[in-house]
Image (cartoon, rainbow, N blue to C red; front, side, top):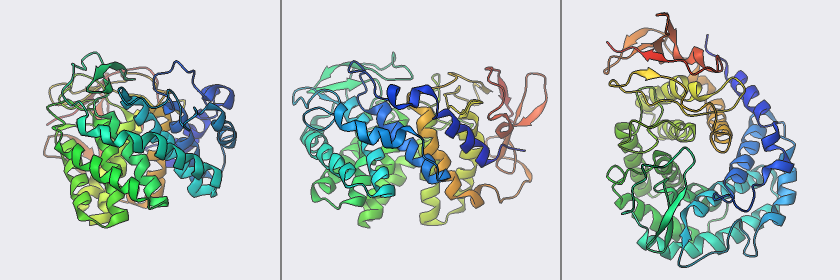
Length: 403
């Protein structure tokens, strides 16, 4: 039987108690070129775990207490805003920090937290908005990009990253903030960045799929707050693009569009699960119901490691049908973001664990029991992919069975 959702949650809670996430180690050094990213994802994960379990990670409240001491004079982390070198990684990072602050405020109604979020929005994001008009989609190759992206130079007044498109990740945090505070300036930010993002050819630019899906989540949430179906259509278009050109045959992701020889990223798989659930709730289309289940059982479950962390895997296609661990854990991002996927699964638990278990072969020739994919172990034994989650931590290869 697949591991239960409660087992996944318990493992993740235990992992977030480890030393990397204790308050004395949580804030990263000033030299870290993703200022606020680790911290923001950690706070978001702490909030997710509290919502799932009713228990607080000890560092959560201590983080809120100490955060002001780590902010610069303008109310955010890292360097002060530079008009001639807007740092897309800094904007991406603070998108996650804003997500964490918004979720903490939603749970605990702490006015000081909302004030920190408001100052961050005003002094960082709104100052960056005019610069999105010349966001450099034409840039040097990102072929050297790693699991954790890096700045590769300055173009058109932007410090650009190998995580192409990460400047738009902040739309998720800003849409959460807009849901709390219907600020007209934030609405203008989301309107403008949505329109600009939709003009970019993500496949041609080999954009990061995680950035695309996170932006899609922000756009969808903006639709829910405004009722403007243009934004629903935008988010659907982005998700369809991902499903067609960015998803592996095990329901994970290619880290960048058109780069099938790279690796997957649990952060993006988490995004895809949440979007599938949102579209199912919005449309009641059974397609999204099936998709959400398959992402959970075959994609996101296999990203979870035996100690509760999460990490990337190989990109499976019919041309490369072998699935194995690519990196055991990405503690700086995926281990934390995984908890948002768990929270989404918990909120929809009946959907995941109440369905037909007939054996089928789908249009790609993949073998399933219900929505659980069958793979073949090295010794020839056929097993459910979801049964391998939280199991052995050696990077053995599993063969995805095609007809």
